[in-house]
Length: 176
Image (tube, rainbow, N blue to C red):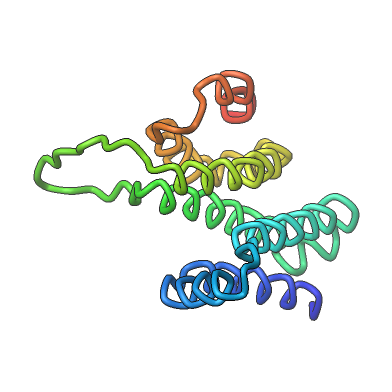
């Protein structure tokens, strides 16, 4: 239980740290003055979430009774959803909320820094998709609605390769 809370706190803190643009600007200025490279904050966030996903997955696979007692499956799905939403937020796509009026979307090219950040986050997205694909059929079906919506949003991201989903599309099709 303590380890689970620790992984959760570290992942949450790393995301918060990466989200604070004012702090990032100050760090960049300090690094520039000291003539050192910027710290890899995105990589810290990715590694934090990767470790959290890995820990949850190991609990789910290797300790079913504890997993059921602690509702690890729901936590795993929640973390996967969070990872996918972070990626989508980075790409500036918001959740698809039901709206009563039509919305016009402009597709603007992403800047180099944003493309690099998305590229750095892609392996974590694949890990999240892979973790969800390992769920039992019944469990998968109960979470498929939200995951399908996130997958649809991922397809809208200009930078995300469609061949990636062609290869991994079976994740969402085989078990439904």
